Length: 261
Length: 261
Image (cartoon, rainbow over the protein chains, first blue to last red):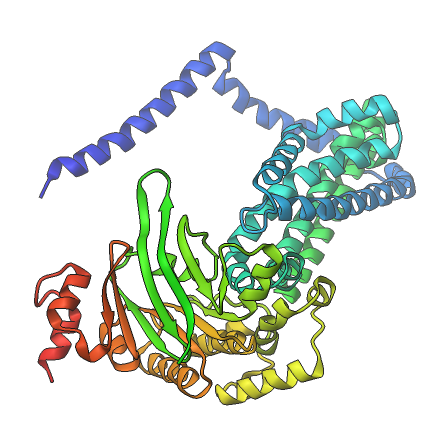
């Protein structure tokens, strides 16, 4: 029995933790981050929130306006997520190890998806703002690109994970490429593909708020407007409405998942 | 009887100097039941897949039904594959589809891309599928989703999918390696019946030496990618089996089985 083996394993785990602590500490010194200060700020924030940041009767008058903007945001999220999913599916099928048509095409589609995924939503918004200015298109395309990039990655992995073996079997029967995709890849992976899509719709509603702040559209615009005009009750109402909307979408998508699985 | 399949000097090389199989030469007659035995990693699966070109051999000739399969184009390869059924250790079914749908997948090789994509099967094909399911004792499971079946039933679905191709040759890659003894017997009995009564040639990779000796008309022993035995089950000696597995007497589970007789 070699006791030094276990000693060595323990040493490795321990030294990793020590390294992590050291790195954190060094970075804290460099950025002049004060732990005690940041934690004592939390009660202050809560105090400010409870005294200022809550909806009151006057802010309810703004509700119809807010709901109208919410509708725009929700519809935008749905539209961008579904279209993004469609494109992502095509790219994922071409990019996946299991169903790729050609290695070079596969690498190319993966690269495109990686680029779209790694450019942040806020960056897309700022870039698109130049061409579409303050219209719903800016937000729509920003969300579309983000969805496309993320879902291509998720879909590629799903397809590889789920349908590898049945694809081999159908190839062996002499089935054509598109027959294999529609008879084997899609039925096997559909529930997971849908699940990712529903997740992306929820995610887009959250993100649409940020994009809206940046591009001046949808519910993000309402929030920004009220917040900057110091109308905190109305701004907080916007937050409440967003939370309710996200919860509602999450609840219904969980229901759809349950039924589908 | 006439020769259906003929391999001469078939080799498969991965990278620079890893040879999966080398210099494989043998002929198989119509209706013959051939078992291929050998240790894990001996190249049995590679050998099987070189026959229907799921893996492209680097060297040598594979003649199936008087056609050199390494020389045919993509379209003709599909046509040849319709003549070769294949079953797998892990069944490789589309588990979210029903039993009958999985069986009909065996017809995809005969279809145009559009018909295959839409899964349009003729009345005759559907009736044949039902007939095969009856023969294999799966009639009452026809409309069940495949993931609800037991392992033995799944493998029978795999056999049905291969049979509906009306193949001349069946390739079986470890068909009973994941099954319990009674399910294994059912599967092997079906395969034997297929070879005897339908005149379909069966080539079967097996881990169980006793099963190979009991069912096969002919045993091929492979070690390190080379054939080191080719003959009838009765002509194989215990020494030869140990040579195939590179083991000493008493080191195989097969030996313990023998000593009880």
